[in-house]
Picture 1: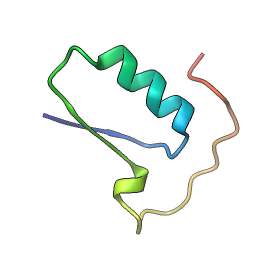
Picture 2: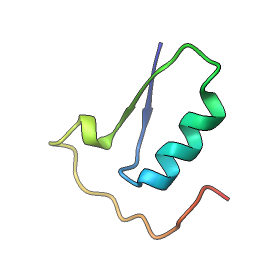
Picture 3: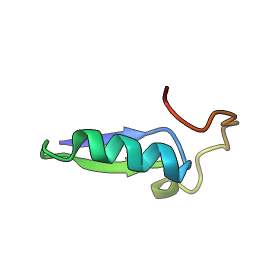
Length: 47
């Protein structure tokens, strides 16, 4: 199963991957979709 994270923020990506590492997921991010429009990210973390 694939999960797409709508972020390019490396901190958020690591945080989510760490939380879901026991699940059998292929985790994709916006970096995997270079033609997707840029999204403003102004927070450091999910929390």
